Length: 60
Image (cartoon, rainbow, N blue to C red; front, side):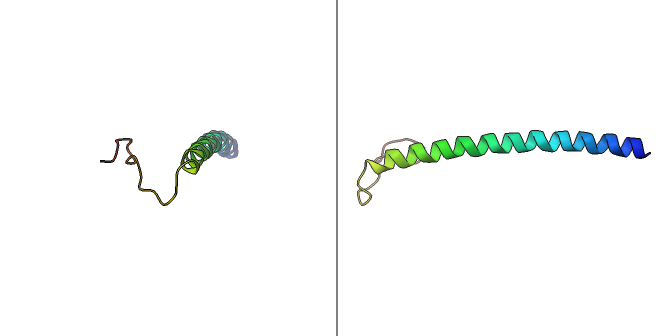
């Protein structure tokens, strides 16, 4: 039984490492997106009305 428990722990640790790697990749991608959006917004007057809605369609 101890060997089975050890095997299960090893499998769980491997899955947790995979999940952690995925979360780190997501974090990196989100940071890149936030940076790109910040740079794009930096070029506009912060007091000006938005030119586009969040879905990308132009404001009228």
